[in-house]
Image (tube, rainbow, N blue to C red):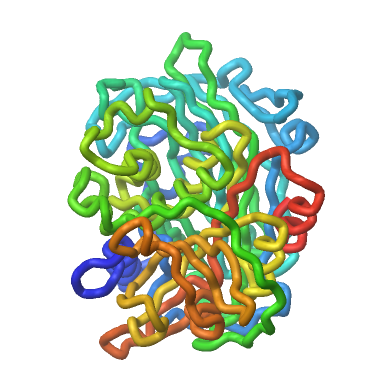
Length: 479
């Protein structure tokens, strides 16, 4: 979460990367590092930098509908598109996996120094026309990757000028890691340096470079490549894949919503600060673990948590070892942090029958619909200490879990930036909280204009939920 200067370590790193790439000469697309882009006729663009956006990036006014979600998850979805070695699986939870591999390819892992040969298979989605011309897109996925397997997600944008982006890498992901001797596993990673003079990828977010101009993303395709060790039978299985396109209007303040719900969900409370100094190889320990700590709270609300065997690696002297576990298995080795938005969603979906997406919401009214249906949410916000009464800190980026609303409409949040678990439950003033979450521009401690997250939200929920919960998710654009 926060460092001693009152800014998020992980988001500070994003801001530095974003600024560095923004001032670099643009236009040329970097070639992928030894990677394997078997679905392309040539080499793909190299990947990303930060899920924050460049500071003070101007935006044009967006239409009233600002978010478009499209997720492939049904057997019909997986049967569509283009298959090259993949097969759709018609099961209680339909998915896609390797059928007959399309071939082999070498991948040089930049974080281990090892080069290995992998069998691969590729599925390419149909073109999805966005209901709102977008300035940003964020992919998310739900999958299982047995030992010796991994996957890559790419996105190609169609622009409003009729041209296309390269195939951008939105993530190379596996649920495991090689920390305990499994040298057949790659390390989860975003990919830095992807750009084409029109858009850039910032760790997990594809963004139009200059939204004040007319260029927009009007449609996109996703490409999923599944990998396994040659000659093996294991395969990744993907159940949900999609992206959120958005055109959030640029603003320092957002319209106030009227309170409409008084309800609180009983969500477990975990402090990230009790883990400060633990496992510093994962972004310096607990002080930067707001995202995995929030993810763990929501997972346990739904009754999911790691097994004793899965937690056996954690020092037994550490309390709440599942938070350490979440940090380890959301860690992005390129970004060097645990705050990659889709990596957190993918981690949540490794638990039995869980689904998870990254999206944006438009108001606290949207959050009230979810809370009323019994669905807590993880939100991303940034603020100065004086902008959020009772927080006691300022941050360049922080994740909290919204668990309810008071009778006056104020926000009840499990804020992991607390001294201990008991102190995690906080009540924040509705107007202050709504503004710091939904705005896209703000002033930092130096008085400079920087960007806000514009309503970014993680939603985690089981496959089998009530009709009311399905209606609440549909009301915020998630199906």
